[in-house]
Length: 376
Ligand code: PLP
Picture 1: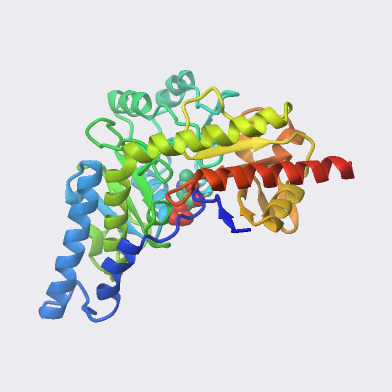
Picture 2: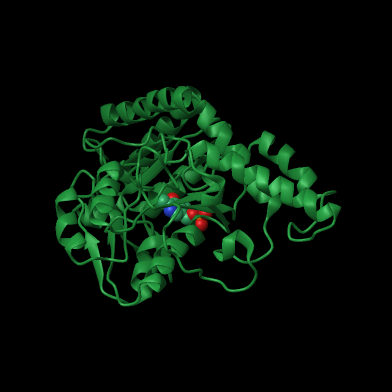
């Protein structure tokens, strides 16, 4: 049976068009973009082109794009960059942030406010007033959650922060290529992106920094990326990211319809066969490609390993540390019962996912669920 990869939210495969665009920049064209000679100028031109093309995808000015070493670094630059720009000011983020934001807010050491989330997986906008009254250095709320796919009210948050004169950061890592991410429509000051979620290379990301937003760097050195991310730039990575983002945006409307259909097919088939199945964040607006489902009482390792043995790759909602499976902080914040959270797996779909893959994944899940039931 052919293997089925349903873990696109973890990493999407590198697109062949992206590899084609990157190879000449990794091989023959080896100049340092800061060098003044012809090799350097060619590298600089490629980097400028990548910046212009990526900026155009989100409707930004090229000078507002800072290329980073991935989404985690972009989120850290947003959080620490603001914490350092406004020492002593509180920081605020939602309770369902990716750890790249959550841990950065904790590590920054100042007072931190966590915005609560409803049982549907959507952050409660009512909590914003109290947070804004404390004049935080930054409010951070993700555009769409990586575990449940729940889309957050970013437009409303960005507008209210802008009105209050407070800097708003959104982790748009899972939103890019799935939702319309346009900086003219959403007045966020900072937006974090990651290339490998849209078919670009791993270890490449970007932070959109709206003009006029005060931000301190994490690293010190040269003047690259306007001093916000010193270090010789990954020209091939930046170009790969730009091409991947362009392709994802061009295909977004059609892919959104197709993937929503496949996701619904998956959920409907599982629900029909397993009445007790829980679909997390089902009432919320969701990403087209993410289905987070729980088989209450089933151990996550049993589900994941069982599916792996069946040749179906999915993700858990938990982080495994020192041998112990920690419950997902996202599901916990949503008030999901621990035995339901523990039986949760995330299916995430992408460009190569077909209806046959979905049917295979459903059959595999049902077989694993049956085995777990028999063991119990
Ligand atoms: N933010 C979100 C919402 C993510 O899903 C991820 C990756 O899983 C990241 C940030 C981190 O991105 P990267 O893997 O590029 O560091």
